[in-house]
Image 1 (cartoon, rainbow, N blue to C red):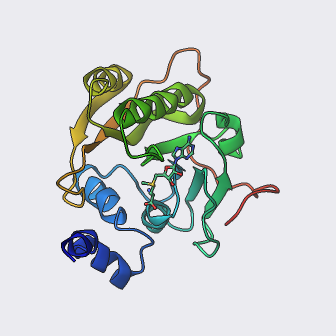
Image 2: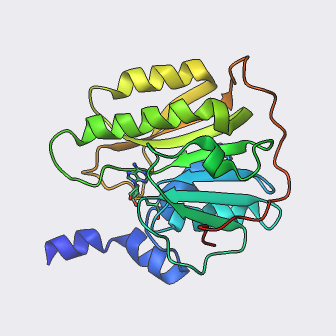
Length: 218
Ligand SMILES: C[S@@+](CC[C@H](N)C(=O)[O-])C[C@H]1O[C@@H](n2cnc3c(N)ncnc32)[C@H](O)[C@@H]1O
């Protein structure tokens, strides 16, 4: 009974009442309130997007002129807004080109709530590996000046990861939203002002969304 009370906390109930697919929606909402990383018309990619509450929040903010692309190992149920497109895939086996749709228009923001599917020993190391993969994809994916939000489980690899983000972005810090459970070791790195590598061709800002190809959900 106590366990049920903890799982069905105020954010769980609020998500149900407000039509969000998961309580995680309020983590992104708080990050957005504090940092304003997303804006109308932006092109955003959500890595590890299922069941889809971050897709919902991002879609509301970027609006009909924006675009939200999501990828997850699991399928996202159809029926989200028209500016949302998802694919099933593993971020380690997917390159930036598969996500971009239009290679000339990089993303303005990369958001990642990815988490290891196991809950046990070594999860923090897997979590850091997922974040490292995000960083690896940035040069091909994120427009100069863009933002990145990613979840990491605090552990041995976290301080170095944060330092690397501070090197790659004008500013980066760790944030623990109120909707994060007290017992959770998760923290969100919020990084703004991407310093794209010199070799990366200058990216255009978000353009109208190209039509998604076969295999894409919406
Ligand atoms: C906490 S959930 C994301 C919740 C989501 N932000 C929302 O608001 O609905 C973490 C997700 O990361 C995904 N994930 C973990 N490893 C992945 C990988 N290698 N590639 C793609 N997705 C991955 C999982 O399948 C899971 O759905």
